[in-house]
Image 1 (cartoon, each protein chain N blue to C red):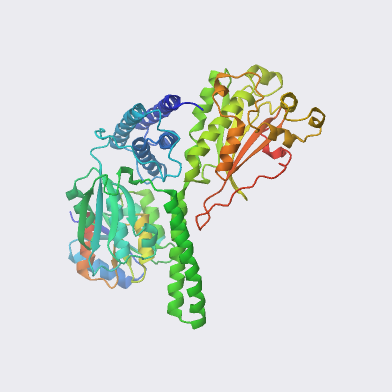
Image 2: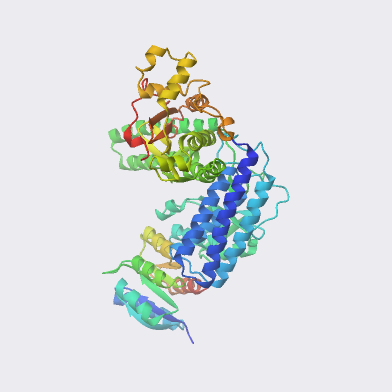
Length: 502
Length: 120
């Protein structure tokens, strides 16, 4: 494992690259406002930066990147037109983003990473006297009461939301806009508005939505159950309980439905159907609460991998796939640690030095693919490289030497059985303990860790073509909050050709 | 000079009524359209200060017309004219960029309030 200081240094290096891309792109936009390629470049840069900052727990940076990403997204979709003032504003935001990244990275302490498994998003580290990058943005709790004579209150609420959005960022909107679209609103509209605008401005803007009877605005300060960034740390057990209770409610609903069918009361049946829809929505919300897109884990690695390769005189390109796949939030930190190890192994032991690659007719630049995909058993996170593959003879030699396998049985072992050997405690086939691998936990630790998480490790390899290490983790908690453990096959199937990167 | 309006509705009766309300309040009706396609074309041609848009019209509906007009002119000011029971459609129109709405049957005071909000 790398230590925290190295993570921070790498974060800064990579952040600098993306900020440069962003700066260049904005510069281009200043002279050519219709340069879509520049917009796309900026968008990708802030998107990646957002993911990286999120991974490091730098919530302020991540939030600022998110705001800029949204604006760029709107430009990209044509909803917002670029003019000089907008470019200037974005340049100011980019500068603030830069400051924030440096500031948060500088503040970072070596014990801050890797802990907090089982939390719902990192709790923002709110420094007491942090300089506010965008105006003096703060959170306002806003409650909007509509005129009782309002004809289409839900449509009115959507207009109010749009007005609010022009002033800042919305969170905790109730009812949800999707519900409003279905005409659902049976009380006031409530949301949290993160804005630098004055309460007066907010009041006026929301009232201008029309048919508003009253607007209550209250500044919310951290510590009142609401924090900047609107994230709270939650015990996973509490979420599990919630999921369990929800399953109970769903069961009760089924029984009511049966009675409703028997009684043949249309009103009751409609009510049961409505309850069903609410339960389904609550389940989906719970899943969102418990999951995070895989990209938030995966996107952090390319710089680590490139840096590790560079220190070994190798060149590696990293491909990321399946970033939209949802991962259980409580597994994310642990999974990240394991991936660091597998990726470093791939760079260190898998990918050959450029000269050796060319000698065997491969491209000098190695290829590592890091992907997430849903399978029947959960989500499979794969680390695939096009390096030399595991070396059967050397593994067996070592195993026999250390009495793990009897000499005469060695030849009869299947490939899969041999690959399993490298996950035995204390096993290592590296000829030299390099700077990179020397600090790593062995594959035995990877396997133990993934099993403890209810997951599994599978290895595929083909000599000279590459190796694939597959971590399968449970997709998401079952509706009742439990997870189904993933059982590794007793005898792993022989390496599937499709699993190897060509 | 008074502000100009383009009125889009497939019913002549509704166009006349809205036109009367707006004219009496001092607005200039510069054009009319009886379907969405025509609404988009006339908007392009007349560049009015604001538009009233019926939701259900033949050929191209009001919501699609809003999308099209907003795409061409993100600053367009559009007021939706809706029947009762069209809340979902009104929400869709607002999400597409319409600024406000009035509900039939029209009361002149409500229409003019909505126009003020649209222009505001």
